[in-house]
Length: 248
Length: 270
Image 1 (tube, each protein chain N blue to C red):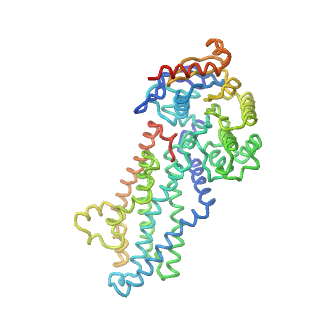
Image 2 (image 1 turned 45 degrees about the vertical axis):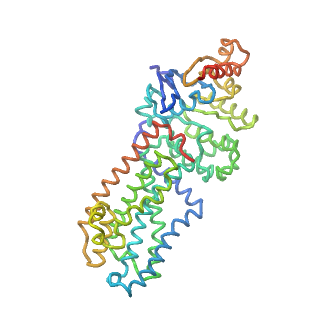
Image 3 (image 1 turned 180 degrees about the vertical axis):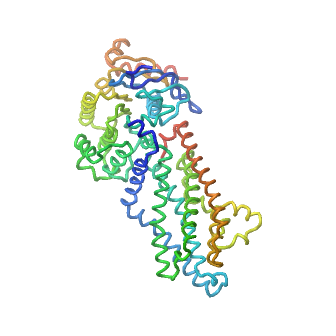
């Protein structure tokens, strides 16, 4: 096991009764890197992120996060990581401030009020702090979810489609924020996305997933070159259509 | 930081209690609902007691026997609801994944549910108990020290049932929601709330003596009718509570691990 890896996954498998969601994947993410999981729906990206977070127990394999064995000691490391996902809501009836307050305390943030104020400034949430989350627009909710994900200044940030419901302008702003945040903190990011522009901009390394397996990996431009296409989107489509062709 | 988050954390329990308090304080109807039913029940049974005082020698011997029973039964029911409803809040808001991707441990969540249950019971029942003094000149506080024991024992039984229901909710999701509202009433006939265990059929008496609440209500009647401190009943209720609470918390923790294996923490909700 490498000391420099933030994430080390070996032979990871997740089997459900009727399907295998993740089928023996292995990868490592260096500290400070941004790695993207790219693949069509059902490729296993979200399940992989959920296993990295300890939300889903693997059927087989090992996961080390920030040097800790996630299967045995996930509580030692969960306070040093965080996540954002469009599939996980924040409580809708609580205000933005109340949600951030509760999560800040769960993550052991030292000065809760100062941290919330700083994130509210960063994500332009000052005027929304006392509004119920359920009354926010999809874009506002995404910004709140990202603010929650950065509450504890995580060493490892897992992002599932972080700009899925944002307009292009706000999505671009969020990507810029994440780039600057990562450059400032040296944090590691693992990103699952369908957005090729996002992946090309943020990720130094891409894991192409198909049917629960990693079928290729490399820097975005290297993948494009290797597959003989002009864009990462073409690579994505080619791999996705191989899936369709191979499907029974 | 890693060693700090590895241990049981009262700070995280406090954070979860804060979450549920925010919900209650932020919703007038929810807060009102806490005191609404206990007061309605108390008023209904208060008038019934007044009527039976002149028509029933059983009630005439101890005028508060029905009102005391109704208030104490509500301790158990509200105690169970306090655990179950706070639990349901996380399913309704699809918040389980957010919570358990944080350093929160299931046992800390369980502790927060217990604290919230206690708060909800006190908020709900203290006004009803005070109103019973004003309206019917009956004070449940005249039970004295045994009242504290009855209160704790019924609350603990409510928590045990609440955690067992929580285990079902983790396993079956909101499909099992109705259990949270109805399950406890299965026990009501055998719990001998308003009548002595002795009037039950013999086979049902065996079941009754396995229910902590039956011992508590027998104990309450022993205090009211005979002025006796019901040590044997309290000891039996304590032992049974310890057993059911251990089973409830154990089932809850096992169900949580099964939910992780099934991936259902991510899919909880409607």
